[in-house]
Amino acid sequence: MAQILDGKKLAKEIKDELKIAIHQWVQGGLRAPSLRCIIVGEDPASHTYVKNKIQAAIDVGIAAETIKYNANLTEKELIAAIDALNKDSEVDGILVQLPLPSVMDERKVCNAVAPEKDVDGFHIINVGQLALDMPTLVPATALAVIEMLKRFKIETFGRNAVVVGRSKNVGMPIAMMLHSDKSHSSGLGMDATVTICHRYTPKKELDSYCRNADIVISATGVPNLIQANMVKPGATVIDVGITRITNEQGKTKLVGDVDYDEVSKIAGAITPVPGGVGPMTVAMLMRNTFQAAKMLRDKESLLQ
Ligand code: NAD
Ligand code: L34
Image (cartoon, rainbow, N blue to C red):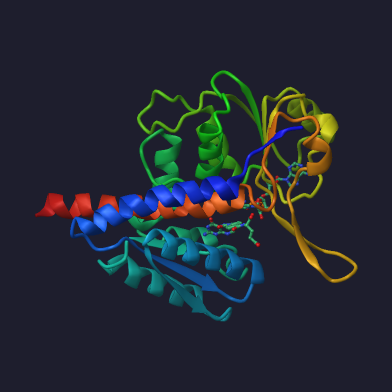
């Protein structure tokens, strides 16, 4: 049976480390790092995720607030609200929970966040810096995957990795770090050989790329996409996907992209859903917020 990569437990360890570092920061006379989470509309999953983020912030000593708007908020009003937070020197990190109502242009909204406060790493400047191996704020879900590989000591150097899913916020930054050169300045490179698969990869090809991989990372939102016969014995399987399914009794349950019961008999290591990448995403967002606070402090001390 595969080793279970317990994201919930690892997230707790990371938050405990952060809590100590933030405590020392505050003891040193500095203001606690601060985060603002903007949420537009009533999507229940989004509200759960934001609640988890606020709870994690409280746990580690970050001053966090949720800013809630009705779904009828205009894009202009949202950008004005972001702009006010950009200018507020008491705020280190800003995130706009996605998805936004379909009338809004998510790209435009993400680019309205000041790059140095963009703890989601979605701003074009931060995406560009990541692509160029420069130190930057990196999307939390991608950091979560990379941190799990590192902390569970999964070798990536020279190994074959497949990323299933090519979205700009999830699949792409994961693939970016996996294939990059560790010796470059961001230090985030993992030196793997990476194949990116997506919805137009023929099923036969997807199967054979996955079977050839030492590490399979799936981020599609398609339940049971990754089957046991697609996994090389001993491979590491990281399941980023989260889908809510409702059974006949009306009970909802979370499932990933991986047929967990069967794949865990073949894989060497596997992440569960829930309790895998999700809680790690939240922990890495906390790390990004502390990083933004440190960057702001460095910028202010340069000006003094
Ligand atoms: P998205 O819809 O933007 O992208 C989905 C990707 O999957 C696309 O690139 C698409 O080409 C690919 N895809 C779809 N069907 C496929 C198929 N049959 N075969 C191969 N590829 C296929 O979604 P996203 O924002 O990238 O999120 C992906 C999943 O990850 C969702 O389930 C989402 O809920 C989850 N997610 C989890 C976390 C976390 O922290 N665990 C964070 C973000 C997203
Ligand atoms: N701007 N939008 C922005 N940034 C993000 O990083 C996200 N994402 C995704 C959706 N939209 C976003 C998240 O935070 C998904 N996501 C996220 C956050 C937390 C969890 C999962 C995804 C999480 O805590 N998952 C738990 C279960 C939560 C539940 O009960 O639903 C888990 O164990 O997987």
